[in-house]
Amino acid sequence: MHESVFYFDLRKVYMSKIKKFISDMKKELDKIRWCKGKNLLKNVIVTILFIIFFAIFFVLIEYIVSLIKMIDFSSLIEKINDLI
Image 1 (spheres, rainbow, N blue to C red):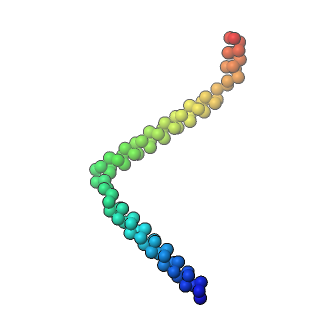
Image 2: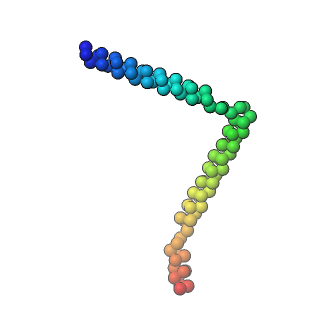
Image 3: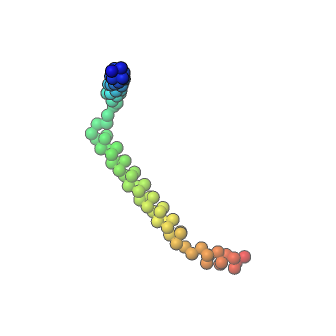
């Protein structure tokens, strides 16, 4: 019986902490200035364009690196050694 009383008190403490956290979170969310429709749409479009740009950029970099890996460097090194 003693353990159940301790469990109940502990549960009460955690529930009060959770309620306080949610209350504080709601207060902080009320302080936020949310974007209006046109501004939000503009920000979404800019974000999507940046994502597309960087996706294309990294695909091109990966393609260039794979082309460099395909080059036969042994023949190139032999030609350089012949010149020296």
